[in-house]
Length: 376
Image 1 (cartoon, rainbow, N blue to C red):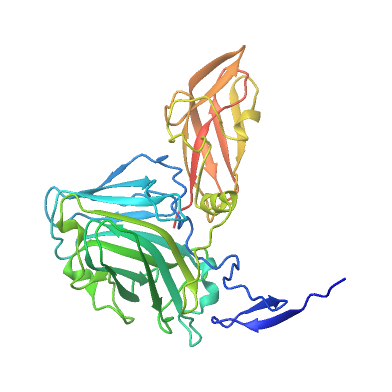
Image 2: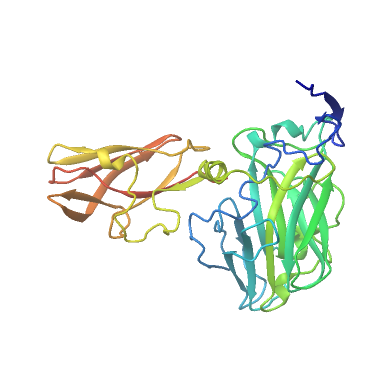
């Protein structure tokens, strides 16, 4: 039997890898290096791929991705945000942001695309200490505009901010961007289940929230002074995907997690009872809540415990629908007939489950659709 020699070597990021019979792998595939969840824009539990109109609001659009806006500083400006099948090689999806109308934000107006990262997932970075680690942000981007664009990394209180820039050279062409950011040795950076750090992409931000790129500041910056403002161009588009934030000064290839693994990471913050392609609130008797089917009745009151698919980051905020798509109602079934419109009278939820009670004269199990949200 021939022998196999294995040698330990040090890679560029300071870690170790192995060579086998003189062959050295060139790509590290260490799991867990990407602190961004749903960076490939694969999951859209809330909208199932449908477009969302955003103006002065802050909805979650795709899973873990939030759009923050408090108005454009002018009239007629808004965005549509949608999961897209337009993507660079190696990816299936992207997030498409389209400007409708045009305006130039002033003062404290802002429009940003963001992800908040849980403190538990960045505690090893040591930010706020003398041992703060450098991180690298990488992503694929495509736009109808060219020029210098901006973004920011900040802490939960937005008292510490690091504005950064990236350049789009060719319109309507996928380009890969990497930005290395020195770890912040100052400020307060949460390492709990609260917001550990925030990552923003500037779409249109007023002067009150703009700063110079390339250094940490004791300020609440949301963008970079002089950067291209997408809000200024009616119909402008921005696609983004393959977002990765990792420790170290060199970007590694995007961490493609298994579909089920990435879904569970998303479900720590938001889950639904509905099938993947069904928008919450849709009229359907398919895939009711997984524990609602076993609720028992004494003829005057129903009740059940709804066990979540994944434990939540914190106590969940719940929404409920019956099989007809009516909120705060549930459905029963007996004698092969669906009965919707039953009223929920008491609900409570924690990190692992929700308790549902309802007055009813029907001896039948409770069937209910739900969403459970524990977003940052």
